[in-house]
Amino acid sequence: MSSDFTIEYVELPNGRAPARDFVDSLDDKAAARIDAFIERLRIYGNRMQGKFVKKLTGDIFELRVKQFDRIFRVLFFYQPGMLIVITSGFQKKTQQTPPGEITRAEQLKKLWMKYRNRYTGSQKEREAILKELGL
Image 1 (cartoon, rainbow, N blue to C red):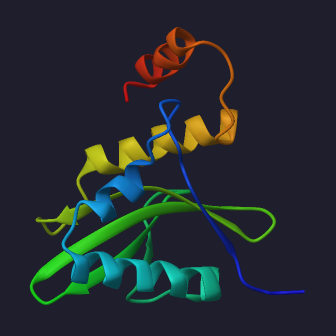
Image 2 (cartoon, rainbow, N blue to C red):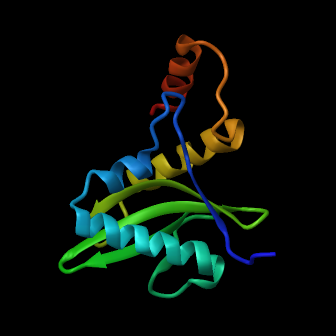
């Protein structure tokens, strides 16, 4: 049995994954660096503390990735069963993590906890879910 974690991305009812969209929007080198850190997170999970992982709230953590003079953050939470769920990402421009980014990660966590990326219903119902969470 493997002791590695499983990585899952929060998916919205429209099929988009905010964290993946963020990484894919970056240049190839930055995206590759973030993906390499996500791979390290998959291997080390909650043993990867210190300068790379910081707890922001009770459940939300940030993975810190630096590339030259740019700083990126990927927000995530842990779930039982060796699962790490990645909510979102952003490029850091200030000393503190913007409260809006933490709120967004918490909203995405709520969405994942309720639906676990399994959405049913009509397109209209899916759009209502996004509107309800303000996403």
